[in-house]
Image (cartoon, rainbow, N blue to C red; front, side, top):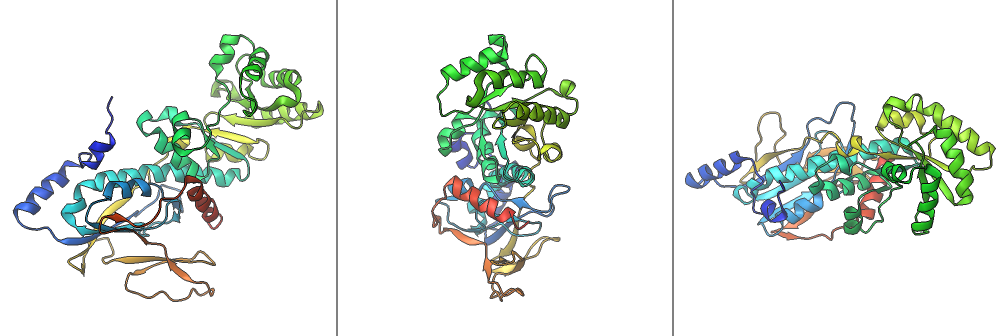
Length: 382
């Protein structure tokens, strides 16, 4: 399989070849110097005003043992364009070959988390599940599910991610099961007989017949045991999804099945979720989350031998990212500047905190639920 394992990544082999060539020149001409390199993003994807920072834990695991110092914002934090999210300090040769992997961790995982967060903000208290592992290389499925969960998804579908993160995976039943059983109601009853009682009875109703009539048949068969129904109707047969949901809701309610929730999956994104968020109870979102546009981080030297220096287009020097604990106002200032109180009276705190000191990780990794809680808390301010 075409997989770069952990050993290969930590050996610096997942690198752009020009870093290896640069290091040959640096060694031959004695150019190696202590530097500070800053990670930030110049421009977010079109229509984005903010993004969610994810990937820190893997970056620190990669750099652990290297003679570097690392400051960064917390994983799950919300940030904006031109704000430093990480600074690496050390001899350039100590971390040069890891730039490709570092940016890869942060760019993809932050992109996934940001897309999940955008959809979760629209969905509000409604359930959002990540169903996109099948759209990505399986080698990165756990990272994708973790990022989606941090960004706000209430759960995910893959078993491996559940085992690693300690979170029970979510899912109902595939069309294949209903096709093999030959009838939606029969399969719903089989599911009820065979699957553990703590798994919600949510039945897929769009395999054979009209969604409304299938929903009613299943509701009458399972009654109070039925927690919900799921529509994954293909686009060629979908028509007006909102009208379908309204019709099903009306018919279920009029027959005493108000407890049955309506879940929708298949081709969902910010726009399609917003169109039905008031009537649907939950969403299974796949490709738009797992194949989210990356957040295009870059790493740039901003200081050499203690002196500020940067390529054109970049602000030189080590920086602090200050944020008010009261109004969420943020400000980028030189690292040496003492923060002043915010105009609102709140305290300005530096979000770039020490994570690695002289090669040693100096902070305790956080549980993924703690990181997700931070993200959801900060999303209220954007």
